[in-house]
Image (tube, rainbow, N blue to C red; front, top):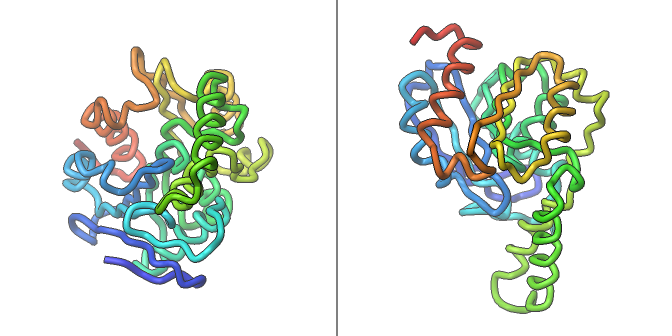
Amino acid sequence: MEFETTDKSRIAYSTYGDPTNPPLVIIHGNSGSQKNFRRHVKDYVSDYWVITYDDRGHGKSSNTQANITYKELTSDLVELCDHLSINAWNIVGYSDGANVALKFAYLFPNKTISLVLAAPNLNFLGIIFPIRILALLLIWLLNLVRWLPGLKRRINQVNIIFETPQLTWQDLEKIKQPALIIVGQYDFISSSHTQTIANHLINSKLLVLPNRSHLVIFTAPHYFTKLTKQFLNKENGIHD
């Protein structure tokens, strides 16, 4: 399925389960797609109406703009919410998707029930130094061959790493919805940056997964959904 945004981009999405269950939207990370969460959907769908989608310029979604910004990504999310006639939903956001979730919760608190934030970061410096170097090297290499077919799309995806959702620490304090922040012990996001985010989200809980990395959604999908469902079920009054 797909819908058209106000700027004529086409956003591909999928729904799973019973529409009378609490809605749960899942937002993938940089250069990913909704396919990243196929295994997770099977765990969530027993209790939730699950919505997955491809960010603009990712997967099967198009992008009519020259670049991709958090402003557009957040606008797409609220348009998807309205397109599906959902009053408010739970959000699981991974990496850059967690940043979109934060921006959405700040701008549209009445449309947000709860948040699962897997490895969010508010700025490029929140990423550990070796990964920042790798990101800079990658974008430099991609720009060297940007004339190759399909490379412009890839460059736009990677450039989101250097974008900011334009949220201040004070903005985070205005987000009142319950939030679960999940990071791996060996995450790409620095522990101090993660802790600062948790400190400013006044209704949040921080969970650091031992011996796990930024890629925990891929390496341990059912472990991830088990932990997040415990939180989501509590916030939605669902008893195991």
